Image (cartoon, rainbow, N blue to C red; front, top):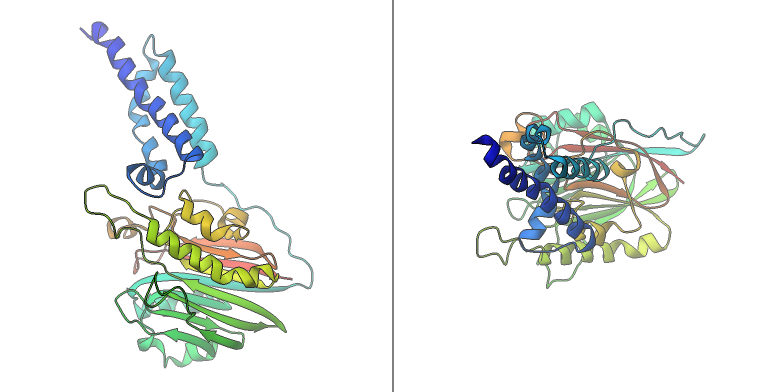
Length: 333
């Protein structure tokens, strides 16, 4: 009986890896901004998991096409999704100024004790928080001593609070004016810092996640989010074109497999891609984050050409948020 079923079973089993290879080709050649195909871009690495169930069938007689398809899938996965095992060795320039920056979406107000613990443990030169209510910490004497310069955007809804903290003097800080047709109040703050006599532009952003136009199951519409990402990029463009030092950080609500990522990051250095290692995911639902893991990478630290990435880490130890914290070290030229 098994012998009679084997040919049909092998044909059906080979169909999935072949379809997966075709799908990966579509992702590379025709990236989507909406619909089911866009969803498959987001979760692309996890589409390879069912292949594990097919490994036992690959040893059956007559399974050569399945073996070839599985081997090709392994190659594609390795090239596209395999995390870097070790960080590149980057030698700092002797005498160059170095700065450290932290970015963390602390999730709807944030846990003051976890935020305080993170700041005192890492002590970055610059810290940017999204979804934060700074009120419980604004009079903390230890934090005020560590970060005498700060700018606070109080929350006007559940997820809009933002804070910039700095050891360096702030020349100016504000919530920028962006296209009112895209948002009534931009979820973005910016500041110019005096870093050893040089000006550093820091932008912290938190555009809303995609959706909006969806009215049916498995609908995915990133048009509004992508328009906001493009507006953010247009806003920072003058500083980039002038060759100024630029840090763009935050929760971007887009994965690196979506067009929105490239809309906002073109010409900038992604710190993880430059000097990071290991699994770079930064967000996950509570049942995953409670175990110290994350599902998707949607938080980033981007830098302009005057800031050379030296080190980068994703810290998922704190389980007080559905996001992990990002920490980068940079050399200022």
